[in-house]
Image 1 (cartoon, rainbow, N blue to C red):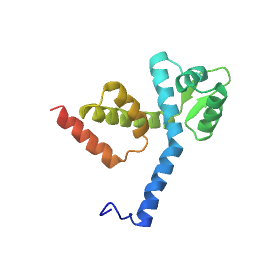
Image 2 (cartoon, helix red, strand yellow):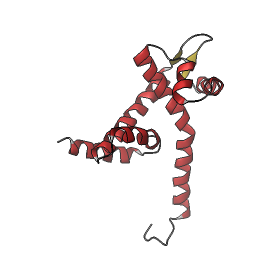
Image 3 (spheres, one colour):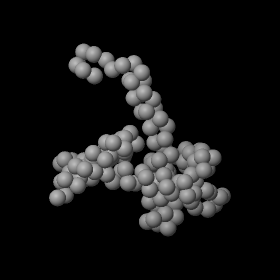
Length: 145
């Protein structure tokens, strides 16, 4: 956009909004697989009750989402057993974790407090492009020199 009083090309603007809608759709799955991976790493298992507690939502809501993630090939679960990630689920969790770390570290590098950086990274990580992540990483590297 060239000035405050002009709008972007309609096709360009539509593509921006499409990207955001897509990010919102995948956000939930990304949060789940990332938390499942973290719980398995720290506790040796991930249970519906743990997800429910950490997301602050009902068991029924978690179960509904887990059913969807199973259909998408990201999670494996059996009645009365812990949750497990498929190879695809583990790969997605790792990608999400890396994005989260970069966003949080970038925010900290520009003076955002640790707690706020972690909280803000939870939202930003789902919407940031590869180009922006690379720029964030460059800034982090520069700050660490």
